[in-house]
Length: 568
Image (cartoon, one colour):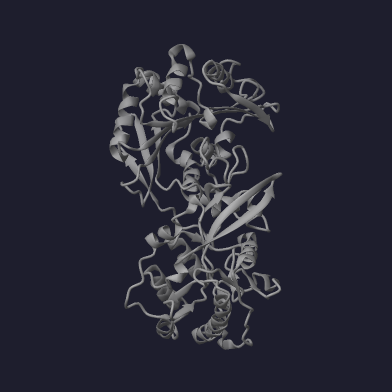
């Protein structure tokens, strides 16, 4: 396997215990569930799989390569797919168990996998070492029974034994070979969004490569017959050698074409995304400040936490900054940032499993005013950071960020110290660098900090607010808004760093240190107010990924929102 997903089998093993010596074989599982209802049957099967009762050969996922031209550029994806349909039991006696989409999704979730699209089913068939001709059994009311599941599986095993014998005669080992053609796949397709409560099936390829079953959504989600199979694909993937996820690729309006022939799939799963596996933890940082932490439930203290300290914009509460699904009469501020959803997307699609976001709100909802009155020297800002590191680990990878007036908290922290601490990994201003002042030594501190370690990054998102009109009138000066402050910062940094600059679709990109320094400045000929739009359109996502191998994988800054399926 490629180095980026090498060890995938070990990852699967970590979530899948070794098969017990006394585990039931396929025939025994079939006998146990034959008389049960669908719900009861699938509960038993899911428990068996989670308990590790799958053949050893099934655990050896096979690498699948996909290439294609996207936006005029050749792109290459590496995936890891199960060698066969989900099977319970042993190598000597296993049963490929047809599952409803909800049960297939449950197993996929447990193993950090996804189900295929029709395009992926075609690609898997084309890449298969062993292609099995379909063996339909004449339709009957019994086709949904476990007895028929076992009957059909016996036919498949008999055919496979002969095919593998032929392969062995040619000196080719059948171990860990990709097998296809013997089942219809339960698949993902954008059409499921309009037809909830259905199962999408596709495939069962003839040896000519043509599928017997075109994409079909006519069955309800409780229909399961002997011809169905659940092929799992590991969520972890690579794009041009850089780590990404299948979810991220499928949700990207352009990159989705590599894996889907029907357009993007924003939620690569059956049914609603489960409630976020996270908690909101109230933090006590003293009077005048509310703080909550958005913490994943499986946060592992053995791994360094990625701690994002997010100072709220002027006028917004913690709840509004987290965001939520639209409701009648809801304040518009609940729908303009969606930091909570962007954090969930980062965990799911960008591998930021241990991401914690701490939201800081001050009395009066205006950090510049509050700091001027209550913490003019920045001592409390420094104390808060110490308290957060004490709570989430001294080795936490800390990002200081915020939107609008929230940037004042970052500058208060910088002003209070002779140098930026080494434990700060990233600083990101989301249209929030109003207080930048080269005369106060800000550029010098940033340059010294950036030069201290290659992991450090500075990201600035801003727009031409000097041209913007509010109620028909300008509201910031040419020098005092984020447009002016960003250009002042850029000029100061250019005295020490060589920048590469370009403009595409009105977005100026000024990049240095191999992408570790990025100033993305949006031009504004329409004179619109784009203050919150920059955050809403994947702003936090890019602020945390800019300059890393995952930058622009599955999302585009100032492009369509990619996190809608993660809004709660």
